[in-house]
Length: 262
Image (cartoon, rainbow, N blue to C red; front, side, top):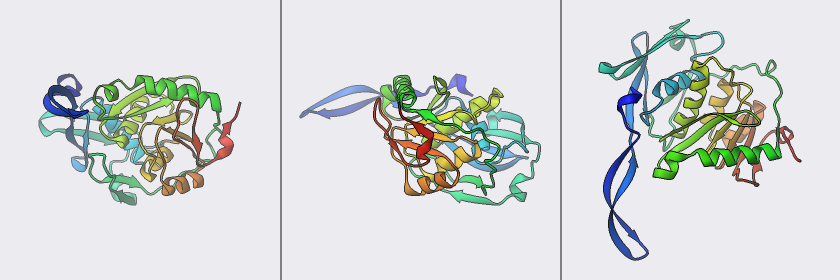
């Protein structure tokens, strides 16, 4: 699916700048839509950038709580003529057996998002903290990696990182999608993401925190701000939120003790 679709397109536009009108060729982001089905039942439609859609789908299944340690993903295949990803799980009846909450993310180009009612046990997770200097170093690397954003200004970025370096980086028109892509990439490669740090360019809403809870992520760092609901949810689940993170500046909104100052 990824190989025959371009992430950008050229369009002629009129630019008015400093009192002067000019006609230029501009680079614009593209978008597509596809369905996700479990046992031939469509569970949702995703609108996104056209790259890394398999990783996006896998990540969506993880961060929504559909895929978990007790319900592994067995098969994931894109059906071109039906424009959908066909999913097979250890328990394909999960949608009927679990209680779902429905959220409608704003400004992400997506429809309803399904989240299984959160019932997570955080006791078995290793304690993770981060140094002040590591936050600065990771955000410097993160900002330098945002090639598509610099070209178009039309996408969000997300990454999963260790304390020393970025492990996977993705971009998408939706901030939720970008988060799902990086989590899905590590899931499909059978890598652990519970010891990783989530970096994002978008605001940290309650949906982003719910995704982090379902992926066992304990530290979220963003260039933008969190919402009060996100902070409250993070505090209840021992997640450290760091916002307005720049090269040498940042705000800590929850779990202050998880940031060590040099």
